[in-house]
Length: 160
Image (cartoon, rainbow, N blue to C red):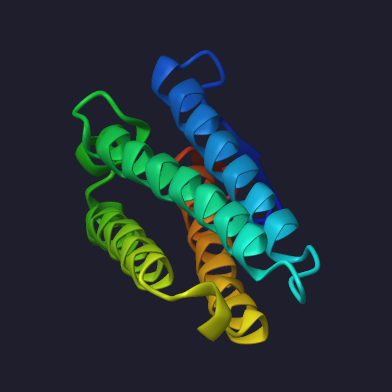
């Protein structure tokens, strides 16, 4: 049998997996809203633009906090993986740490932007910083998806 053949055995009916998916969808929606607000025109409307970006950034920060908290719960899919797949333990720990760090970075950015007077704000610089946050979040999401998939994938060709 081809040893590259894999069959996914993701527990689709798992409450923990459903909660993880819901958290990921909410944080993705918050990220997309932030990108929409950040991509809107800023010149001549800096105060309004900054206000919209801050609201969207606050929503993303809230979603990341909830996602981080939920992933640390004993009933989460990441806790299941950590318990049932010892080989993936360190990756779960690192993923949680990286989500925490991302949440903290979003909070620091929001605090800095709140302290910036709109007339001193450079929208292009803010967009670049927000783009880094978005890139990191997408990277984290992909790593989490890979981890979950890997945890519930069985190599059918092993031992052939």
